[in-house]
Image 1: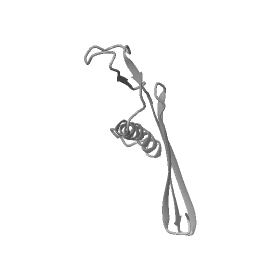
Image 2: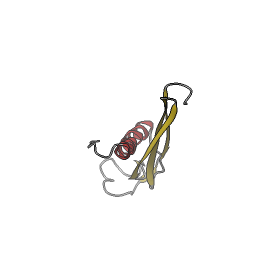
Image 3: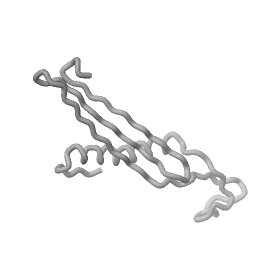
Length: 110
């Protein structure tokens, strides 16, 4: 890191479990060599959301007859598009929180 003029590092953790909480943690840091000294900065943020248990309708219940109930439904996992949307959404809140910690006087919207 500090052998060059500057560098940035980041670590992320994204967890999703149906019917529980989805979480995203972002840890971002920077390191630079300035006037012969090494300077290091680090911040972090966390995003969390309650998740549903995704389900799919079975042939036991005709289309349109299963609204508001789990009758005739079976559990399924999140598909790739849903995982991407969860990652993007939770990540936005985690990075917003990290930025707010790093520079609390700046107002940001997600």
